[in-house]
Structures are given as C-alpha cells and as structure tokens.
Image 1: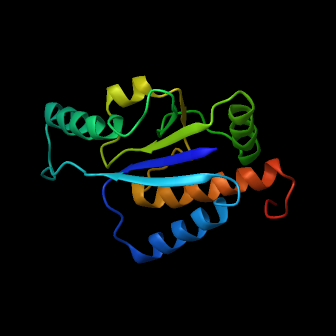
Image 2: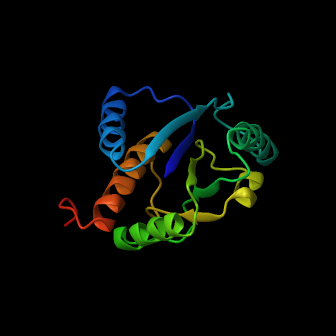
Image 3: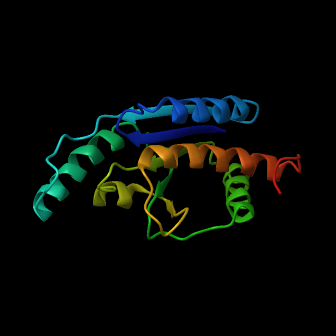
Length: 159
C-alpha cells in the first residue's frame, strides 16, 4: 500500500518530527509512506469570513495538486465520524482488499479544509471533538496507521 500524508504548513517542532519519523520508520515494514507538506497561506490573525474561505481555497488548490485521480482520499475533519482503532484498522484492511493501493490522508491548516478538498475526499475521519494543532494530528495519525497494521496482523502493540 502507498500512503501519502498531506499536510498544510511546514513542521517545525523537533519533538514532533522525531515522533513522526519513528512511526514512519515502523510503518515501512507494511507500507510505503510519503509525507507531503504544502505551503500554508499567510494571513493576519483576524480574518473576515470571505478571507477565511479564500485562504482555505488557496491551500486546497495546493493539496489537490498533490493528489492523483486514482488515490483514495481520507480527510481529517473535526465533525467527521469518529472510529475506534479496531474500526479504523478494519477500514484500512478493506481498502487494501478491494484494490485501493493509494491512500492519501489530508490534514488541513489552522482554518481547516476547503470545500473542494472535502468534495474530493472519499471519506472523512475525526480523532476527537477537541481541537488539536494540525502538526500534532500528523503524529497521532501516523501512530494510528501503525496501530492499524499491527491490529490487522495480530501483532503485539495494541492493547
């Protein structure tokens, strides 16, 4: 399986980089993982509703440019369906079973994802109703993908 993790903005925090590197290394036994960072749109602290939409659209265009037509896209969205780790593992396993060998997980910037990215998405997932920094969500996502592979292979890790 080829997994892309597409995020808005450059990851700067060393501790997050180290955690993500550890999980992508562990994942290399199961899948090819590619990290793709697209530039975030510079914007002032206080934006009008129209300006927020414009920022998300520009970031969305950059995201969509990185997704091939044959890729199954899963967007991370706070209002999406939450799953248990076991449910997430089953869904990833089913995607592989039914020939979806290219999967892209998309994590938006601080304002979220554009409507165009959401329309392009085949599925959505939420890890919590709480708001987290999108850089931290990349680490959580990597860990959960790794956990899913361990669950699907009945290998020790998941408790």
